[in-house]
Length: 121
Image (cartoon, rainbow, N blue to C red; front, top):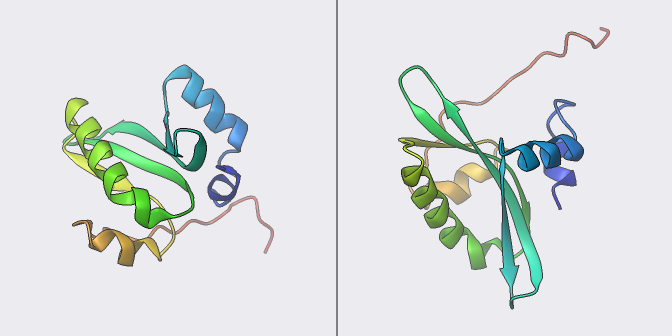
């Protein structure tokens, strides 16, 4: 399920890298299950310590029927962030997330741009 969001990382990593990071504890893999057996969504979180803030970062989200699980997932992520002494939650994703997340009190902080120095012009 994480193939699509990870593929949008501009070659920063592949699913195997996310898997290995989860095995080592660098990422936490969250799984949303419907009817106690069907996986309908997955997402990853990791903690980033800035000099003045500690943040729980939501990196890769994939799934279906988001209206059924997103609010509960965000509540659980917020609870987990507090338990990990984080004072901030960050999420990375496409522009469409802005409209969805604003309903839950999230604000667009900044767009991200990159330049691939390996690309030939």
